[in-house]
Image 1 (cartoon, rainbow, N blue to C red):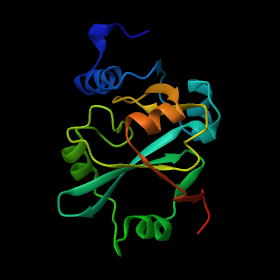
Image 2: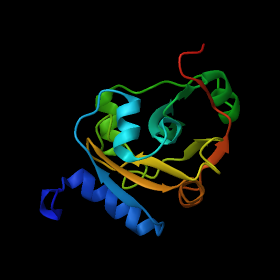
Image 3: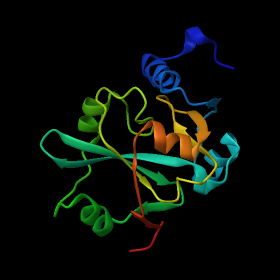
Length: 166
């Protein structure tokens, strides 16, 4: 178990953001994982309940977070339609870190350097317990999906496809 003094600054920022949100959460720390199935097992949730926080760029200095269930991927046509834009992109890892304060694989809306808008896939609401990154590799927070959507003021929409589909 990691002691509080071993917590990285980014993890501390994420956990502070979670505490400030007022929602109940449980922190899970685990070693490196090589797959979604391993991450889900380590966190005690189904793979569909491991949420990826994807940073998406709409334009210059205009980003948002998309919460995507682990077994799904963004449907770019549906996300563009929802946002009313013709183009979206994924920033490179340096830009993602610059605009959130987190490395890829640790990104969370909680404690982000800026409070970007959040879109949550429709499967997050009503999902029960979900696991979201908490600012460090192998660190996650388990929260209620409805609470997550509410405190992030997330726009909920069907914006994903099954992983591996076109």
